[in-house]
Image (tube, rainbow over all chains, first blue to last red; front, side):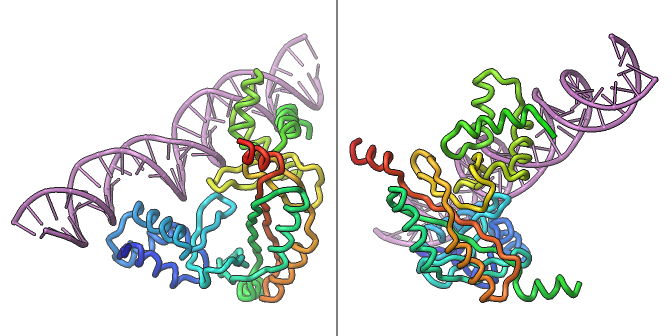
Length: 130
Length: 130
DNA sequence: CCCGATTTTGACAACCATTTTCATTTACGC
DNA sequence: GCGTAAATGAAAATGGTTGTCAAAATCGGG
């Protein structure tokens, strides 16, 4: 199941700091001269997500954004709301809390989504300066 | 700042168990004979969200869904993935964890989104039975 | 009650990310 | 080289949401 296009898309994500949208990735690849269609970018992204090689989350505006994740383990994200820089964080406390809250109400097969947003140190500095 | 339409939309949400989409709310109101436009439903929903009288979250498909929340306090949701039934839960532990994780990495103005999904007791029973 | 000003409404068009369609191209085995 | 199956991408379709703008409801004097 090799796939040149998919690897190219994956590579773009690997070289990015934060989350990127599909349109964004497509635009960059075209700008670099790559002959690839938007459709293929979407398909590659989906395949990577299915493979667990890429994380996906929704922005407040309903756009899907993707990021190559460092580990396959379960983790959450601390995302800078200004520059998009992302830090992967583990949260054993949250996992246990979610599980406990669900069980407490009789719910089973508990899953959860957690995203933390903030302003990163450099953006914070820029705001003060500028 | 009274508004009959907005109150009507709010009422529909109050009488609903779980989260409802804008289209869904609109369809129900029309079915009940209400003379209201889709645009107005969207506007009412946004106003209610801005007022903190209604919670909003995004489904995996990028659709916004709304719910009248019992308290104006900060809280999270435990949502049944089958029937949409929702329980509001407080999570002091999570609030603290999010704040701590952000601070630890130098981030400021920390916010977070947390949603817990599971199968509620009755749906769980139905699955076993059916 | 009447009139003009302001706000609210809603039918319809515009948006835009994403998906589908489908004809063409590419990859691979023989 | 040939045929078949998979991959590709341009263009059209989709669908939730938002913008436009004229008509309708509401309000405040006079």
